[in-house]
Image (cartoon, rainbow, N blue to C red; front, side):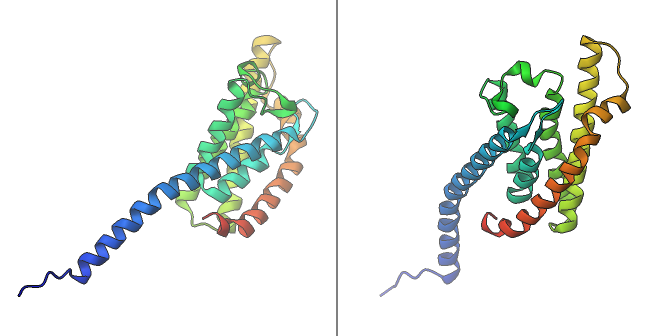
Length: 201
């Protein structure tokens, strides 16, 4: 009499396949939830603002925390969704504003620069092992890129609508006053990333 026996290897492979199939949808759902939560966080942080030429907000803090916690790929997607929501008129920008006009206005480059910052952080994340050093370098680099992108955008719109303005003058108006505040945001984001990342990875 012959018995049908399943080898241990085949059983293990079947179980692994089943586990992978189960994890797939769960992982996608989890990613969707995390991206959505971080998009909402960025909007809330944008609403917390102090009026100025470029409003003092917690936008960059939200981007630092988002990418540091959920990674560059999901973090960049979250920032992209945030910007698209604002572009379509959802009031997610500072002072509860939104619309394509705001995004394409004189300070819109600093909003688009958030996505550029997230992409730069994602790149650095792939080059340097995760840790405090990586977080410091990626956040600082992302901030600098956001500053540069936004300032060049500001120069272009200002020159088109008002007259020429020097890059140093733009930095003095739109960047230098914000550096101490943004440095504090980086430090706070790093502390929170190191404490919270184990709950989301």
